[in-house]
Amino acid sequence: MIGNGSNGRCLLDRPVLVLNRLWQAINVCTARRAIALVCTGHAQVVDEEDGAFSTYGFDDWCTVTRGDDGETVHSVTLRMRCPKIIVLGIFDRLPNKEVRYTRTNVFSRDKHTCQYCRQRFERRNLNIDHVLPRHRGGKTVWTNVVCSCLECNRMKGNRTPEEAGMLLMCEPKRPRWQPFLEVQFSKAYDQSWHHFLNFDSWKVEMGET
Image (cartoon, rainbow, N blue to C red; front, side, top):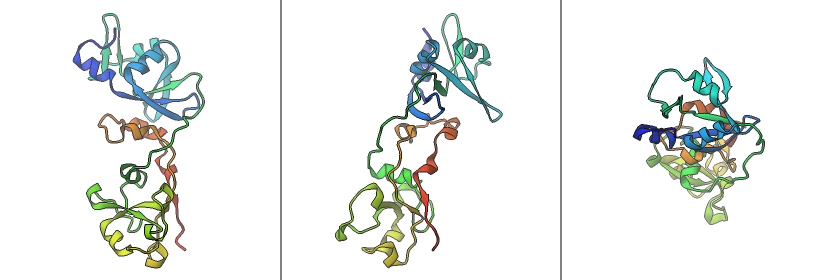
């Protein structure tokens, strides 16, 4: 059994990014599940070194484990670094999931940036603005809401951006599901995932005209 001791159990519960065989991010699983997939040959570990990505099967990954940097899980007979990313050997589809509409997810889509003044704010200083005001038939849907600071929200009032003379930074879009949504506020999120999570695909820049 891999993961003796409380630290091993904690590492085995850590989230691991799962890629399909086309190297597209499709899910997040626990390190325990990731190791099982690698051990049975259904996946390989993805590791980055000096900007290059390499893949390793179970035996090779155990061989390249270097030292004990607090990231190592072990059993009586072997030890290995806890993987952060794995790639599946067969699965090549994308998950059919939709991002649930919530205030938190709107803030995440817009990167906590006011879509009018283009400044980034703490969540407590942000609001949800309806591009077409609700009292004029505007709906609370992804394509009609944006993140705005309190001051811009006050200035716009019950007007459209055009009527208020305020240019939207980006056209509001329904975001495509990304695995990071499941762990977006977790300290366990690893920066090595960023290469595979295309946050910019959520937004389309508006012209200055």
